[in-house]
Length: 221
Ligand SMILES: C[S@@+](CC[C@H](N)C(=O)[O-])C[C@H]1O[C@@H](n2cnc3c(N)ncnc32)[C@H](O)[C@@H]1O
Figure 1 (cartoon, rainbow, N blue to C red):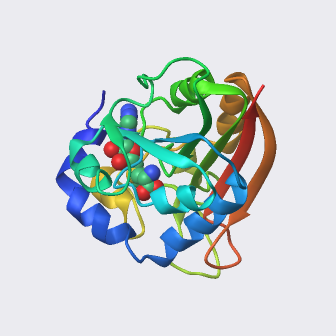
Figure 2: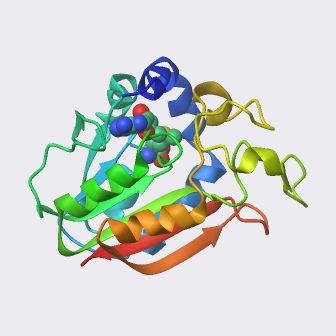
Figure 3: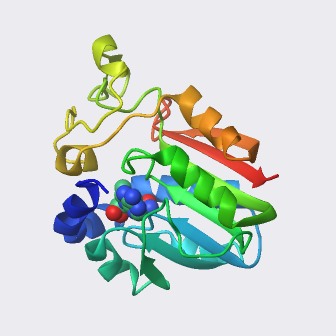
């Protein structure tokens, strides 16, 4: 465990306000809808936070359930979907038991995202769908200054830093409050493949022409 979950416990009310009605959340929801497509059965959200994506998942035909390490976050999520407190690296569900797993905006929070990907693959039924959505690993991180919508300025000596950093061009986001990690895009894709997931689609989205979200849809082999 890391201090990450404790930080969200302290900031859960702020996070709930931050994501509710935020155009960024709408962008994430639209991408989630697209990458999920329609489906049935249980959809597990790893690191569900305050459960803001529950209705989006329901609208695809699935039944969402959520797991998160932060009791504070789960206090809000419980009003939106069935939840339980668990580490994403140890989800209390049997092997091959669910048809969908999603991981939205968590790869910069969890200490070992490859372990979370392996856990997603473990609980997925063969042919089940996995969707990852996260901040774009090339254009968003402690290494990037996005204060000018027309350009992203990358600081080369910060790019290789994968540990928790509070460095941010914006004082208003998650990074400045709870810190965030960096997983380079090749490591993210390679870890997804190594978990036994087969990529079907990748996607880039942004509020402007420069993407700030990167998404992956994959199936359990
Ligand atoms: C940025 S929030 C994203 C929440 C939600 N998925 C969303 O899109 O709004 C990251 C979440 O990951 C959770 N988290 C961090 N490390 C975790 C871990 N090891 N196991 C489970 N959840 C974790 C945090 O508590 C937090 O709720």
